[in-house]
Each structure stands twice: as C-alpha cells, then as structure tokens.
Image 1 (cartoon, rainbow, N blue to C red):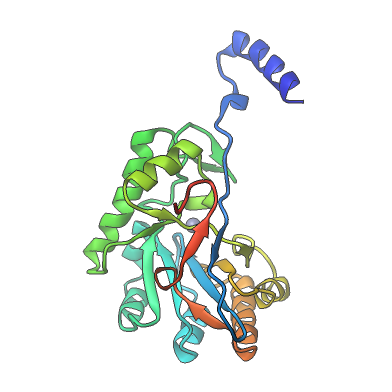
Image 2 (cartoon, rainbow, N blue to C red; image 1 turned 180 degrees about the horizontal axis):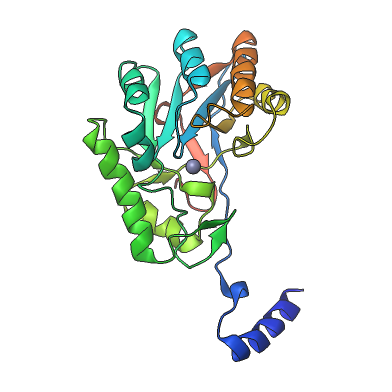
Length: 246
Ligand SMILES: [Zn+2]
C-alpha cells in the first residue's frame, strides 16, 4: 500500500509538485506515571485549556474535592480567562499550570492539517509556539513550565526532538477521557472512571457548554469514591514513548 502510495505520489508530484503523502508521519505519544506502591492506585488528571472559556463545573469540583490537576493552558486562553486563572493561582497545592502553546498551533514542523487545524509548518514556527506559550505563563507569575503539550497532542518526531532540547518534557496521555470534549457525558464518565493505577487522563476544561464536562465531573467523583489518589505531573514519575520524557 505504501509503495503504491509512493508511486502515485511521484506521479502526482511530477504533475503538481505538491504531495500530501510527503507530510511527516505524526506520533501521538503515550504517558504513564509510576503506579502506587499500595492502595487504590494513583492517576494524573491533565486538562487542556485550548481557547474559549472555562468549564466552571469542572473547576469547582476540583476545588471542592481537593483534586489536584495539571492544566495545559495556551496564551490565548490565559488572556480571556483571568478569573479562572486567579482561582487556580489561589490553590497552588491543587493546580499546576503547564505549556499548551502560545496560539494553539500543532507542533508539527511540516505544513499539514491535523483534525482540520493547520500545523505550525516549520521548525521556527514550532519554536515560536512553544516559547510564546511559556512566555504567556511567565507573565502570570507562574513558575516556569516544565511540560509541553501541543495542540491536537500529535507531533512530528523532529518537533519532539526540538521541544526536548528547549528543556520541556512532552505530555502524552494513556486515557482519552472526553474525545476532544466531543463525547457525551455518559461515555466520558465511563472512560474516566475506568482509569487504572498509573494512568494519565486527558480531557478539556475550556468547553463549558459541552456535555462532556458533566461526564468529566462524574468520572472524577467515581474515581475519588474508589479511593484513587490524584497526582500532578510534577509530582509523579512520568514515562512517555517516542523520546518525550527521557
Ligand atoms: Zn488543545
């Protein structure tokens, strides 16, 4: 299939000098934390704040139940959500803010589209996305971020190497809790409640009108009821594949 694709690609290139099959093969890295030595297990909850607003259903439940979380914020989201940032900063024991990029542009250094979003498209543009995200966080007075997660959580391998050189670990995940915030409440709750010792959950905290947010709340409360411990990425030994953490 790949040979055929390459063949067709060569033909297409000779015609139009453009060939999408030449786009980099992307990876979606996984991340696990070290399992608990005993008890009901521990999981890391990571929530992306891509753009848009704040899902206060989730934020309130985290505060009320003292559930720690790692929040991946973009520069765009930080600008529009000052009240939520204030709540997070008022609970430094609960919230660790990390780098989700300046403008929510996928960290892919060749021009292509991922889930309909245009990639950064060049090494310089990937650098700009990572560095502007870190700079936006620095302006809030937060500690310097140590983790990066790109928009769409997919990367070109060369972008991963570049981001690691900048000193960031890259945050994959092991459980896709809310399917990009597009799943229903029931399915989201089921996925999150099924988290096992060592899992890293990804969901979203920027879509207050989506049903998925209600599912995030239910799933987290189910885990808490089981006695699961929540940890932030900085407090856990996270191991990812594709050279994202080592
Ligand atoms: Zn995002």
